Image (cartoon, rainbow, N blue to C red; front, side):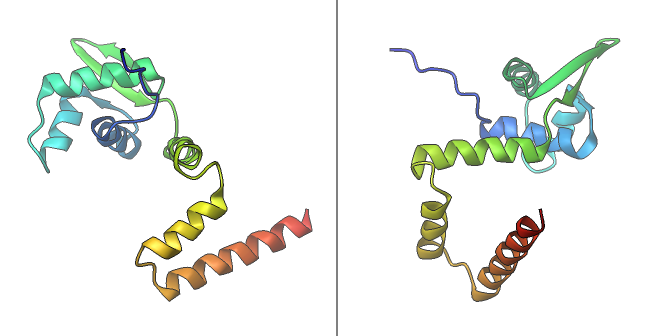
Length: 131
């Protein structure tokens, strides 16, 4: 049985989107060069992944001469929200509370980070009560 295509970003697609979010737009060559700084990346691989990003609705493109220029169609915040929702539903039964409990039990989150999160929670509750 064939596996259904995921609408979530793969690691390679995520790397390309990071370049697009940082630069606003980029050609396949520019993306390849940016990714090759950390790890040698093939132009044809980037070209294929960019086409997939366009098919998935994450990026759009236009042709300038022989070059294809890609631009992000969604913001990084929107992509994070989509990934988080998918992860919550897939692994935590859609419950942010279960995710938070997991993070506190299974990671090395320090007390300063927990206190900062608590302040953000308190502030958001104050903001909601003003509405």
